[in-house]
Length: 454
Image (cartoon, rainbow, N blue to C red; front, side, top):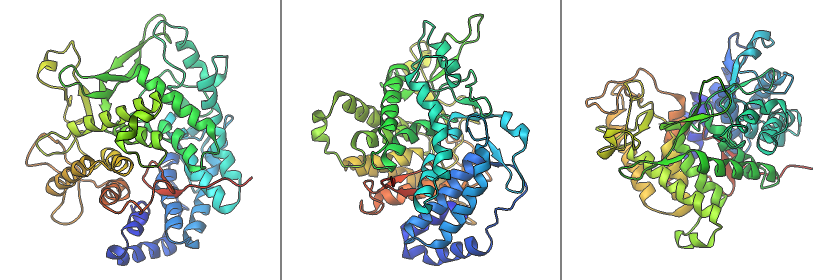
């Protein structure tokens, strides 16, 4: 919680200076990585390593954060000691990785959402071991997109390409085997376990100042595949959403995929990400949109539409959006009167997620359209009204459709690290964490853009 919030406090400045100094003291005297237990390689990287690296960058290079980040990076490196370099999903900082842990599935997002952090650690330490570990992970994904030959990491996609219902090789199944490098026959989606794989394709290209064009090419191919296979509209209002593809189980497996009109709140990152991909951090006057290439116009338009759809899911009694939305299709009777619904109480939760406000922040910075600020203010007011706990702090709610709300007994660290940060920056000066100078990791920790040393 503390490390996730360090850079939020640094960005906010004097009003939280006292809290920041207490947090820094904790990092110096109490933060201990010598722990005996299983910890997610992915979560520790994006939250803790990312938080320390961002604090280093924003604190005028406070050596304390560099020292702790390097210590953590060294403890994470054994996770990559697998035949194909894919990290095992869990680590123990008190011992070497257990051999059985590598046989567990690792998600595509977990494997391919470590690169910004490890590459920046190499940049500031001059030690290439971190870069090499993170880069090796990406090699298999390059084959995934450009080859249909018998490359081990492509087995599932290669088989799918033989079928009638073709799925583009730029779309990756969500589960992998860290030991064999093979994909499991699993869903294709931009929600849980898949989302930040696509996010980091673009951001790797941006982070290294455009010096790695392969990631821009991979990103463009992935976005084209998303347009082709995953974008759908509701019959009633024409809301654009990103569907999921589920593998069909039959005698002829690996051939066809079933479309599921389900969209996680996590997918709401994509609206802003698409707009960021169009401008690469520069602002765009919407009047000049027709001067862009057809592909960029397509991406910008879809980015706007997806963010509008995510805001539509906030049209609930609380003004908060559910964890998962299911959209009605032509075959649903309800499609004449409604666009979407939540299937059950579990899906109806709101857990203080940041993805919609992330896209609002990017939309505002890149276009200057005041609607993004207006929408952000609506969300902030809803959080204040329904999520603020009288005794202090904030909590998620069991159902966004019920008032008065029932609190969930939890405040995720990403509320401080992401949601509040993006809301603050949405209303702050655009020079604070300029998009031409920083790229945000998937936990909203801004890392400086740099040109790699030869």
